[in-house]
Amino acid sequence: MKLEASWLLSALLLIFAMAGLAIVVVYIADWRVQLTMTAWLLATTAYHVLRDGAHTLPSSWKQLHVPTQGGLQLINRAGQVYSPKLAGSSWVHPWLTVLYFEKPTDDVWWHLSLPPVILLADANADDCRRLRMWLRWWRHSDVSQADSSDLAT
Image (spheres, rainbow, N blue to C red):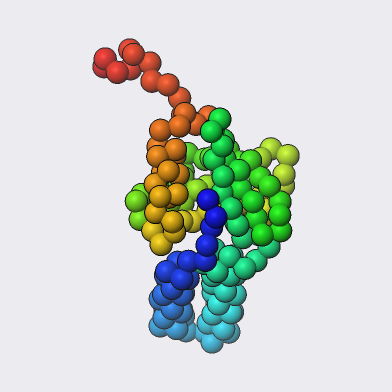
């Protein structure tokens, strides 16, 4: 599944940034703190819009592939291929899918190399449906089996 730029996600990120700016301006009295927080908010918003909304940064995801044997492969714009394990905190909904990954034990900077995958409903509908079905029905490594005695109580 090829991941395209999402203008809806970019717009939502900008709306949340404007709300944050309004809160900073209204509730922070010191102008130096206002300036610092405004600069930080604008910089992080620009980074996330470019990475997650427009998919223009090298760390942005370019392609997501689910082989028939299971697993998940992600390719970023720099051409690096990752096979991460999904975290239990991943969220699946028909309008929004957010994929989080488990922390690798050997990588200190894992949070910079594996940003979450955010998919909105404006992506290819059939590919998104297949991904949602795989996420809901495939036996993932972090899901434990319920014991029959647990079900009886």
